[in-house]
Image 1 (cartoon, rainbow, N blue to C red):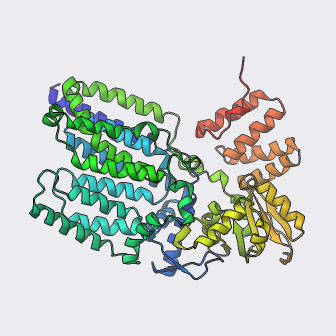
Image 2 (image 1 turned 90 degrees about the vertical axis):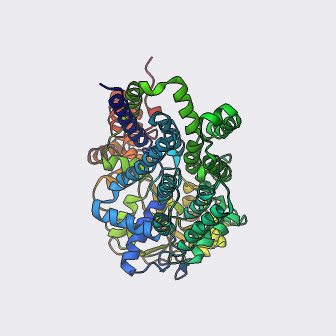
Image 3 (image 1 turned 120 degrees about the vertical axis):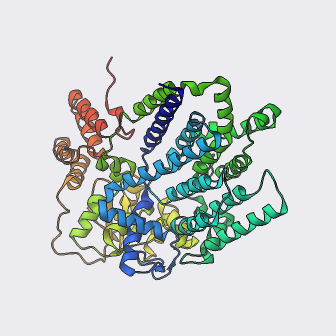
Length: 572
């Protein structure tokens, strides 16, 4: 085999290894609560036939304007779900992250001239981003940024592709504003800052800025990210996803605390020998510093930092590859990296249902409760757990209106959010605050948000009555609410069986709980709740053999850290 063919084969192996490595970081378990209202919003857009939306899902802001700047993403969500079903959204996620990071890999290879140098940067970027790769429209911003880098590096950016990119981006996700900042860095003539070049760059940037006004909200969509970024008084800035990575709680990226120091490697470009051997990536340095400042302010920007950091580091890696003459070993190195990627993927499957169950924490949502609500045609105003608001919208299509949900300040004012925080934390006077609203019902988790405390305190007032409880939630109604005649059971199936299992378990009937849990497990063998309840029950019965069997079977479908290995006694 000739050296040219060997290098070509090695590059193909590196490309394949990069794809499998990227896919292996698409299995992060997250709640994904925004996903539900985005799907519901897509349906609402189809039903109303207009992107100019008013709130129809809450009783606290009913009829108010809804600044849905991600309307196009919502339509794509709903179209995908209508065509392939809700669990198939895991494939949507994987396709987007593959497109994003493989395009980044191709960009790095083109800039450095080395696939072997490009792969570490792209691999580090996706590893750093992994905790944030949930099923929500921000993935479009990562993809659009990758497209911008591919088109804007090592060539002159042209309006024929930049204008469509920004028109799409502004209607898909609010990250377009970062895209405009990144475009300014890419357009700047770093190597020859002549007046003519600066004027041409300014004209292109201005045209792209004007293109972002082509959205239902016009210039308001352009100004919205600015207002959000500089309004330090907004309580929505305290949502955990937007906090600094140094603040406890929310999404964590442990790798960031090691990688955040890597921009210091850019000092190597000050060395004359490095400058002679490698073209200084001025764009990568500027983008890295910008996104690092953003990431230190808000953890949600860490994925952008990872992609930018790859631009800074890849020329240095290429220089190392060249000096060590590693390219001649690209076939062997590609084979090793491919095996590493396959090893990471080994525990996982490509099956939609179990992956969706864990990647969205489906088990944490009140599925059986909403089945019960549908069966009994329960309507009205419900004070629901914030993360469940979107799921209520998706299931009831406005029949149950919530107090607040994940749409945050695109609908609700600061006072509404502060009210919710008081109730969530069972703060002083929370019962009075709750009862002062127009809520007919309270839908709340049994084991989160002071659930047990709320249940006991509200029932003790005599002004609230129980309606139903499933495996994860309870529903209370005001005592003056008219009682339905015949109460219909929820839809038969694994979710109902699991609700019955938890009911028996709370009553101390372990044998009955195991019977229902086995039925749920038989129908949905990957269900986290069924797996854990079976292991708890078998632990109480000292049946270690069955406990280990359940543990093995459940982790075969998805090796989740939430299938609690603590239930398995350690053998001597």
